[in-house]
Length: 556
Image (cartoon, rainbow, N blue to C red):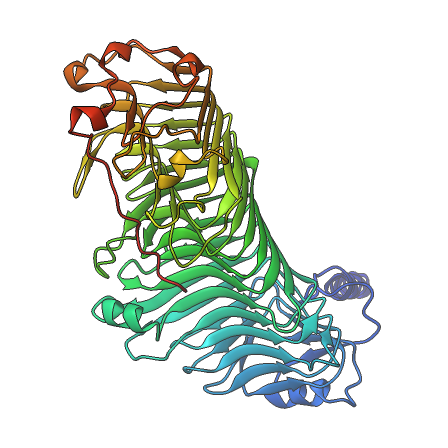
């Protein structure tokens, strides 16, 4: 009997030793913690967050902690991993970070009222808040509240978590934001999922869109006296409410921003870059109901790089808001400069890419199956940028509606059309579009600048036109004139034999109208089975109809 009792005692002792030594700690705290404290109540947490708190690491046990908390000292705050340690309250800011070097990890933090914040960290112009890390947290912005606000901060890290926005906007001047960064530098967001379930109620969308009074943004970055700086990597943006409108994934103003391997799905706009320097490397933008464009850049130097793959696809107009000019893949306005390499822009209901008073270099692009022109280039009277060029190289434009490339300028801008160079590029299978004009052409250029004797307005070098429904290219000098269109330079231009067997009676190769062919023009066209039909339509008295109007791009 004594022997049996001894064995039981040994087993019990071993079991106790196992529980103390081998079970995982409730919170995933690093070995660098010098002193840790378990928190079970609001009072416990408030006590430890004060400036005289004793522990450098806190383990907030599973439960609901309803209070506005202020973090007054450097500390690491952990929730129970895989469970729910919830910090919440109904108004104001749930967690105010008033100290440097604060970490929030494995927590659920909620804001529950319009205008309130889940987390807020604010420094000053002279004393920036430093070293906030938000790791593996679920930030919930409910009832049109905000998620995270960081102003005048530096060294902020947001990673491996989820930002959830909930609430339909039915009143003006409500603008909920998932993460709002202002006047901040050295910001890193990695592996974060932005889930926007909010937006403007569809019954109010048209009204609010005109006034600009409301909308819902997942991530907003704004600079002040200096540009804000942010890196966003391996993150995703999802619009989870298809009935709500006026949602934007990312808006950056006066910022220096790099986006790498991000995926955006849904929204009425994916990216808006204003007065910024932006690089987008890899990733996808798809299924956008665009009021203006899936991606918008104003007075911005924008670089798009392939990475492993980059695409802007399936961009529709927003019929509910009735914005006739929406549905674009990419719109560049107000002197923006684009450098794009190895990207796809396809299946847009309007233009694939639109340049207005902007310039750029496009290399190795696939601009396919966009309903109203692949690349649209326009100059307007209020912005003149003489001398800037758009260069398109080693690219493919196929199956676009109306024109593969369409260039239009107002008549008064004789000397201010951006030059366009197209090299080593194929433009094919342009489809018929009927509207104010009927077009089905590979390339259309309409400008008085074509008469220029000083500018190379259009340069075609090793360009192939194939199976375009009406013409390979049309050059229109606008005003009836007997002067040559000396602004055109051609070399190794090919118009391929039609292989579709469609519309062969009304198909042309290269057309000059409202002007005369310049010297050497025909010599630069090395292949053209339609040459015998390529008349100067000014002489014939009935030029081919083409679009004459620029499109209106509203400012953001």
